[in-house]
View: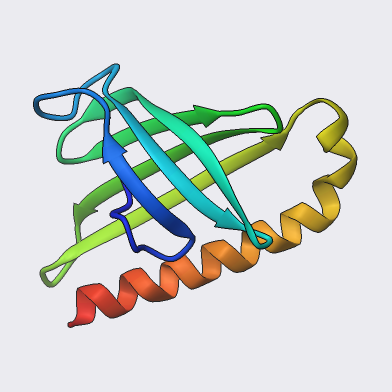
Length: 119
């Protein structure tokens, strides 16, 4: 799960004890359009250290993330992070402008991750 202080994440904490596994839950507060939005993520699938699929849902959005890591040729690792976001109920009418905002958040998160890994 993204650490507290990551781009777009105001805070985060584990809700279950022990190592991450299927069913482990995490509470995050994300910053979005000037709002603090609580999300509870649950790990739906994990194949550590290669793949993890956390899912979150609240009254207006459902998010499924797929995070995969693999060895890169020449050393290091390749990381693929794909987030699928679906607006729910009356919020669906906001999908086009919200999609633009989500892409900007994703771009900032990717840049932050690249910078952290290069450090």
